[in-house]
Amino acid sequence: MARKVLQLDQVAPGMVLARPVLAPSGRTLLQAGLALTDLHLHKLRQLEVPMVTVLADDPPDSQVVRWLASLSNRVPYVIDQQLRGQAMGFIDGVLRQARLRGDVDVGASRQVVDKLLEELLAKETAVSTLVDYNQADTYLSAHSVSVSVIALHLGLKKGSSRIELRELGLAGLLHDIGKARVPADLLSKPGPLTDEEWVLMRRHPELGSQMLGCRPGVGEQLTAALVQHHERYDGLGYPHGLAGDQIHPMAELIALADVFDALSSERFYRAKCEPYEVAETMIALSGEAFRPSLLRFFLANVPAYPPGTVVRFNTGEVAMVKLARPEMPTRPLCEMVFDADGVRLDRPRLVDLAEQLAIFPAQVLGAEPIGPIAGHRG
Ligand SMILES: [Fe+2]
Image 1 (spheres, rainbow, N blue to C red):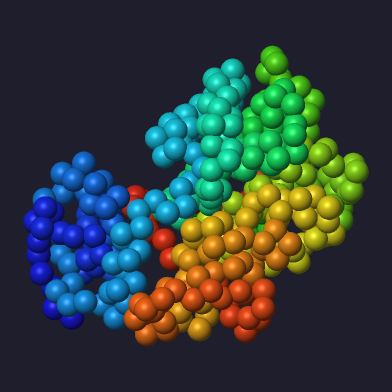
Image 2: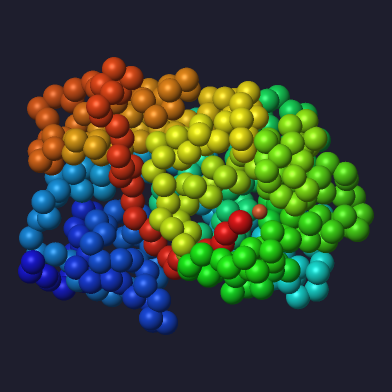
């Protein structure tokens, strides 16, 4: 397909990159094949990228691509991007400090949790997503912030007290802090871990609780949440094989948030799952990894497809979610906008996936990532 090189001010949203955009360091900022959005163009201007190479001809899905690009920020992430970035930077510093000195600044971590909580309280009634489809970073810092945000969201839905919420958010932010004491090459290993490597990796809950346990102001429930976040309802988790009511309720919530975010995000060793796969995987773990009643509460309060999400059906049509169904998380009510050939319908058509059982939302269509890819596991 023909290409053309354009100055940045000549580039319109919806144009598709024919070559990747690189930073001066050689790092890939945006991948070839990406349909540019206003947000991408804004970031490229900030980074003073002078020109980009785009496809000269329309790709097959050009109408869909342009429509998507025109729907800027259609289902915003629940936390403001700037605050999310600040929290990630902070926890990255905490992890580095923990790696170098075995020390964790609990007081400063509490302040970050307070900011996240304020933001959630301010946006409690707004439609938003707990999975940021515009982010593909799989840094441990991103996961830590996400787990904290999901845990806080669940705590709010449960009606937890302010004191409980602060502890819950802190447990989410610091749940994997023990990984600071696990060899860094294991955290970013692309392939499967060996048995010996798994032994090292599985020490992180205890290492984390030990690291925090000696700090002033750290209570029993926080260390319990850290050490027990890989325990399972059926007793097959680690490190102690606790089961059912032996597991601290806070650790159960962190475990749900941890698995949900891990499945929803890219990893070094696998691609992220689509929301229906995340929901189906978690439902399959009911009574095994998770207490069934708690999982039902989770699925009712963390919609797989919030209204405004744009999806491509397995049949090829493109639709926007209109109504999420807590009792059937993978079967929302949708409004079809494009047919399977990428041609816009004269009038959008309602499709109820609760009735159309042969159709499912195969792919969420979102803006593609900007920034480098890193990862974590466990
Ligand atoms: Fe973990």
